Amino acid sequence: MSEREILTWELFGTASRELAHAIADSGFRPDVVLGIARGGLVPAGSLAYALDCKNLFTMNVEFYTGVGTTLDAPVMLPPLLDATELDDLSVLVVDDVADSGKTLELVFDFCRGHVSEVRTAVLFEKPRSVIKADYTWKHTDRWINFPWSTEPPVVTRSGVVDS
Image 1 (cartoon, rainbow, N blue to C red):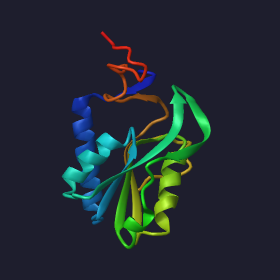
Image 2: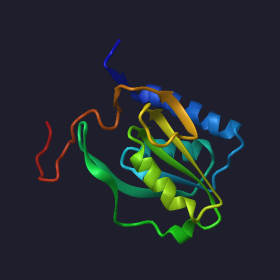
Image 3: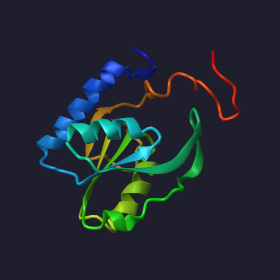
């Protein structure tokens, strides 16, 4: 058994479709899909299409600073979403993984005071997560290789190009 979960692009297609079916089968119809940047953007876009939801918002949250290293607590980064834009709407908050769950919890709490209903969806959830997502494709305690973040950047912020 591998020490890592390997999510290929093909398996991501299957995972996102199965997650969308679970959401649809529950009867939840979000007015807004809110993707947590960066890891949650690809799953959020996929779920928004599958759930026929044209309102797709993003929130930038920094928590992981490297493989297995984090800040003390997740931090929202600008530009910040105006929470009043969510007033009385049903919102689906999407991330790639609920590892510690602290990022998902931060965004959930941000939404909770404004929306009529907020639910959460993740591709993967780990046992130590402080929040249990409403919709989870797979539970795991292993490190996950996502297809959008496994390869190094093509170009870095310093301008160095990957060959």
